[in-house]
Each structure stands twice: as structure tokens, then as C-alpha cells.
Length: 505
Ligand code: NAD
Image (cartoon, rainbow, N blue to C red; front, side, top):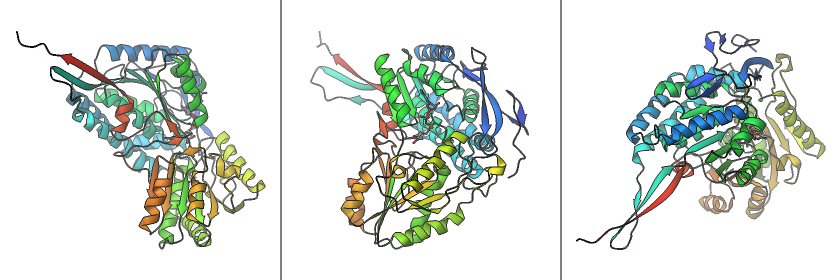
């Protein structure tokens, strides 16, 4: 493990080898401390050492941020800006994010333990691309004219919902923010966004770049702090019009309750998953398949809502597939997230690592067999490293096949018939993603249609791209979809205007 960029402690605004961290709340275009003056420590998961002291926002800060966002929504400084001008601002922002991808990627890697190759090469370019895609749509969204009776003009137009609050997770901090910020801002809303407390740093810098790009003060506000204070305050706030949440199903449920108990704000939930990968016996390219299978479960340390954590494979081909996935592990080195050769960095924190290892113990106790990984490694670094772990002989009723582990743990389950494969795949409370592998077009279409999941990949692990919606069935989601033009529906009201024309004279 190299240690070059990793500090013992960075105070607010301190530099790390030239890296300046933003650690305060961003409200009304200004960085400022939390009203209570509190701070909390965010650590580097690759060393277990403190990284920065971040402002601990509270209910008073949420109230302030929502007030500022409401004022900005009501005075129209953003919503009434011409779509072309709004687009230009957002495009400048995307360009700035791209130009600063290296710095942002290092921040993300230090804060989240994610491999630098991913953060610089994927997360930040994708973050910029998301903002750009929605920016481009800004001046291409038309209203409708209804087929009204003679003497009537009826229009159907879109309006911003007003003040959006977003509460996001720590696994893709910048990208998850962009999935909310892009469509919410492109459609003219103002926003108060709360990052996960483990990963506040990249979003604060991205917000600053937004101001530099020309997003007016008060339109984009960031309140850092714990979920059970900042998150709940946003969920209960009577002046938030829409709450977009990405995170666990357990916390997602609470936002529905808080909405019901406050102002019936619109709630959008992108939640957890336990996604199946189905392998049919006719597959010929087993090595190619193994690459996709490994990507599906080990990418981002398995800290991925759409992770393909259940490999449901035909009995006749199982051994070959498991061998091929094991061989593929040679391409997934675990180690220092700052090393460009690393593909698996550190899990987000000690608590999460212990939770993942607990599931591994439960899997062993319930009778599944570990064929790769299964123990913490690189402990001397102080970091939270768990290597790719594969369980064979898993039954779908075992805990490791039912609960979301959110780590690099793959469960291999056998099937004999297509009907059984589909039943196993759908036998989960979740329904976010699924993939299936077959060379037979008939199986591909039949099975894709049967799977209860928001995104189905055929012969690939895929979440689609910015042009396709992302969201889940069942406990994986509710209320809308991220990405694509469907995301705009979430942040707009539909207005009917019925105009009765008077006759001549
Ligand atoms: P989490 O639910 O613990 O936290 C998500 C956000 O909610 C964070 O900002 C957190 O601070 C906040 N929060 C936590 N407790 C809260 C509370 N009591 N009240 C209000 N807010 C609270 O989830 P996580 O651990 O950050 O992320 C992992 C989960 O997110 C997994 O279940 C994963 O599947 C899901 N996820 C889903 C998607 C998707 O698009 N469907 C994407 C990424 C992650």
C-alpha cells in the first residue's frame, strides 16, 4: 500500500498534497459551518485513518437551506431562465466537472475507497455526461396541445415541482448525485441535496463548480451530516415538494411515512437489490460470460445496488462456469485504491466490512461452501479489504441468497429447467436488475419477459446508459426512474390549461 496522498488528518480547508477539500455546508452559494458548529470525521477506508472534518448539519441548517431554495424557486431566477440559457450553464458545469475529473477522482477514492481507475476513468466522466445529457434536453422538451373541442385550446405543459430534496448513498457519491441533480435542475427546480455522511467531499466540490459555471445562488444547496438528522429533517420538511432518495429499502420506507405525516411531498425511491444472473446450458463463450459475471458482482467491491449477487446456473454447466469465474478473479486485483492496477479497493467502513464478513459466516454456517475469498485481507494497512468471495452450493432460501450483502460476495445456485430458473430469479423481495446468458434467441426473449426486474441485461451485465431509465420493481423502488427523459417526469408537474375562446363580435 502506498501512503503518499493519505493524510493523518485534514482540517477544514487544509490541503493534501495540493488537494483542497471543501468540508462546509454549501447554502445560497456560500460555504459555511453548520449552525451548531458541529463537525464529524470522515475517514479513508483504505487506511482507516481520518481524512477530513466535515460540517455536521442539523435541522436548523436544513430549514435554512430549504428557505433559500424556496426563495430561489419562487423568484424564478432558474425556473424562468430561458431553457437555452439554463442549458448553457449546465453544459459549462459538465465541462468543469470533466476538466477537474482527476482532482474529483482522487477525492472520491480517498473518501470512498473506490479504485482510482474507476473514479477518474468512469465515475467523473459519467457524472459529467449525466449533467450534459440532461442539459441538452433542457431546450428540447415540448408541451402538448390536446385534441380539444371546437372553440377550446387545451395545452398540457410541464412545470418544475419547486423545491427538490435529494438524499443519496455512498457507493457512487458523485454519480448518484448527478442522477438527481441533472434532471431536477434541467427541469428548473431548486434543490437541497444531502450526501451520505461517509462520502460528502466530492459533492461539495462539484457544487462549487456549479456556482463557477453560473448556477445562481440558492438553486443548488448541499447539507452534509447524519441521515437520522439531516435526512429526516428533509423528509419531514413541509416546504419540500419532492424527495428523491437512493439508498436502502429500510430507510426508503421512512421517507414515505414522513411524507404522509407532513405535506404529502412526492417521494421517489431507488432502493436495494438481490439481482439474479441466469446462465442457460447452451452458452458457448463461457470465458466471456465469466467476465460479465465477475463485473456484475465484483465491480465497486460489490457495493452496487444492481450487483448480480445470485448466479443461477444450469446444473450441466455449473462447474465450468464457476471455474471460469474463479479464473477471472486474476483480473480483479485487490489493493490500494490509489494504485491504477487495483480493481477492488476498500469497503466503505469498518461497520460495513464486519457486516459483509458476518454474512460470509452465516453462509458457511447454513451449509454453503466458500470456493474463493471469504476472509478480510491486507489488515496491516488498517483498511477494510475483502476479496472477491464465491459461495457454491447455495440454496435460494439461505440468508446469503435472500438479503442484500452489498459486498463482493457471489452465491451460486443450480437449476434444472427454465421454469425453475425463472422462479428462482423472481423469488426475492427485490426487483432491480437481472441478467441472463444464452445463445438461444427464444430463451432470451421468453425469460427477459418473465423476469420481474426494472433492467434486464441479455448476454451482458448492463444497466443501460443515460438514454434508458433505471429503477426497480417490488422493494427495489417506487415512484419513478432515474436517467433518460423518464427522469424528467419525476421532477415536473403536469398542467392542463383549458382556454375557452369567445366567438367573433
Ligand atoms: P442508507 O439507506 O443507509 O443511506 C442512504 C442515505 O440515507 C444516506 O445519505 C444516509 O445518510 C441517509 N440515511 C441513513 N439513515 C437515515 C435515516 N434514519 N433517516 C434519513 N436518512 C437516512 O444506504 P447506503 O448504505 O448509503 O447505501 C446502500 C443502499 O443503497 C443499498 O441498499 C443499495 O442497494 C442502495 N442503492 C440503490 C441504488 C439504486 O439506484 N436503486 C443506487 C445505489 C445504492
